[in-house]
Image (cartoon, rainbow, N blue to C red):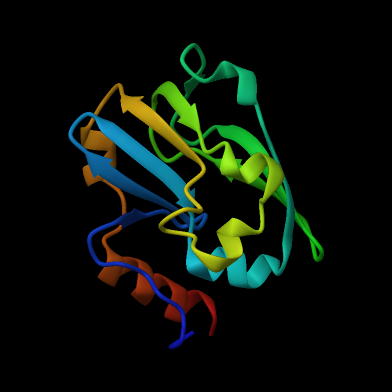
Length: 135
């Protein structure tokens, strides 16, 4: 786990999603740990056409991510209106493997309740959780 990267400025969930807040906008993705566990990502199933009109709700699934090893549900750690999905991932989902916190973000959301972000794990708390979980 030491070689995996988990930026301190992000917030994390126990289901291995991350959130980067920029004012009332949040970007969501999966953690470096999650992409490492999944292996080579081959497909992302989300409601691409709902950008600008759809919503996500905290602790509710918003899609699936498929790898050569497994399929995993994507769970939103926050609630809000979907602004955009990362179109790069439609044709190159493996971008998540190489840059999960940068060009591998999955969607952006206009937050309904910004306090939901503050309730998530800090980088330090997430790393402690991973150490506990892996033992």
